[in-house]
Amino acid sequence: MSPEPQTAALRAVAAASLLLALAGCSVFKTNEETQAVINQRVVGTPVGAFFDRYGPAKRREQQADGTIEFAWISAITATPNSGYYGLDDRTCSLKIISGKDGKVITASIIQDMPGRTSTSRCLEIFRPA
Image 1 (cartoon, rainbow, N blue to C red):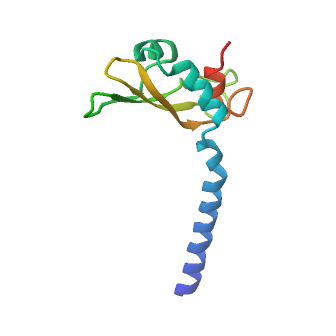
Image 2: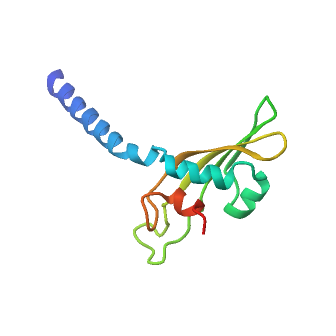
């Protein structure tokens, strides 16, 4: 095979990958409304109370300045109809930073998948009842 068809094939694969990546970017965008709701519900609360209510952190990392950074992902549960994989992958992921006093300083959206009833799983979780 000559180098020209290989180059064209690689370009086609790269272009297709780029299009898929751009299409998926909406999943990683932070919605200002959702971020505002999260800030209102989470910032200032004790980090232990957050994890008691919403589930444990997936990662905990002590920072040099005394703050603690957590990676939190909402629960992944079995779907009622078991679907293709049997798991509900509609998740919300946050980067949470707590201060030396143990209270949440920031809770930034990392990933917000479409929810069960809306376009934001994070909004479904943190919206006031």
